[in-house]
Image 1: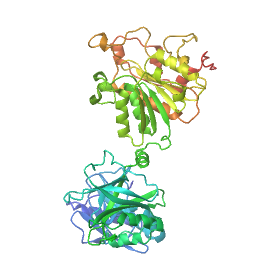
Image 2: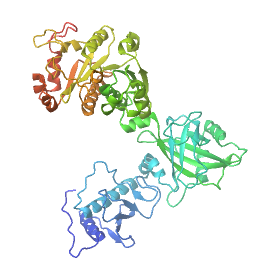
Image 3: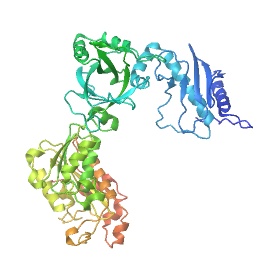
Image 4: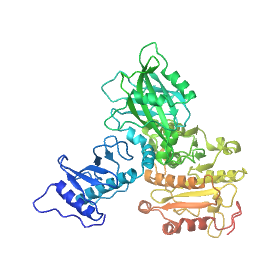
Length: 572
């Protein structure tokens, strides 16, 4: 909004008066004449606006103090309209990216009212499109029906009709109930509070269409269930009979889930809980609408930003210390569906502040602890934990099922040996080698391909191309002592912090994610720290550290892989 803000008249008028004055100004530009309603509650503004075919009576808070767009109500309700809740709240804006000028509250009210008016006019102009859009938003409308309760499902909404299982605390009448639904004969997941609950029959059906839900002030009744039943196919009626069949113990609680296609894509999912007696719906008991939350792999991954395309990918992480654990976590969060974690070490108290694992895992195998942590956190993730040295685990057979490997040992000699082994396998795999330098100097990630030019040995040469024991990417001059100990030789460690480890691990994970499933060439990524702690410790840095912060990743890659190498025969 760029219009001039409305000025408040002297004498301190109430917010409703100021907001209506702003609305008059906004409407005059569009040829609209709002009529103020006198039945609005204090603090709210009510107006009548004439549309092309209908008259709309809208109510709005005249002063929104929560820095959100104020809510608009439509009253009285007239049937079912898209983006209008059961209570009449008009969904004007989803709030994402909204920026409000808090000094122009009256203009915000006027703007929001007209947005609601335009929305209502848009869908009133085309009844067929209005109905389609209403069913696109069915789940939102359903969640506001009277006495609506929450349901959580564990099975995929896959349009395959079947009997499922419901769990609900039928004895506790005081607290709000939650229905938990799983596949038949499947134990409820740990996040479902259903351990002490008895199982009940439930049915999931997919329909091409469902009856219209009740409009205000009507409520959901047994008639709605009957309208669904008469629309079922023969096969669906057989399932229905299996669910609702006669019970020797009197009334039987039933849960029914329905999915229906959305014209906008995907399926809406609604639920209803009712009671059956003698094989029919018992109208004496309440019919409860269920708002369904999906605890399913596909939905949670897509909703959470994880790639479904990566679900079939398998990456091995060799070395699961501070950096490797971050790599594994980042790959899982991005959507990689299968990880193999290889490390022979146990988690110790020395690792706590720079590792992803919590202190409760001390003295436990790192890979086994990570497997539990990651599989509990990321639905659908499969983790193989190899509590062994990588040299004993690795061979061509295990590599054949992989889509990529990340090596996070931090041991140059071992890494170079592995790099040469990978190149001799005859496979086509992206391999990322990643390591962190001491203190605050920075981190590195090298991507190579087992069947292409560019290898780890390309780093181990000097400016003349002669072999070197330290990589040309090093930030530290060689032959300097950087390790520390707190209690003697038994506690030697490399000094760096969690932030440095996580920054490097994320960089390496992103490097691998870009390579998975794509052909490509070797590349080098890096980040450069200020080096203040290293300087204070009296360490000497290389010229590369001094200029790297001003060098692009592309130029860094050229510096590393731009000369011939006897191992991979790369050309300048």
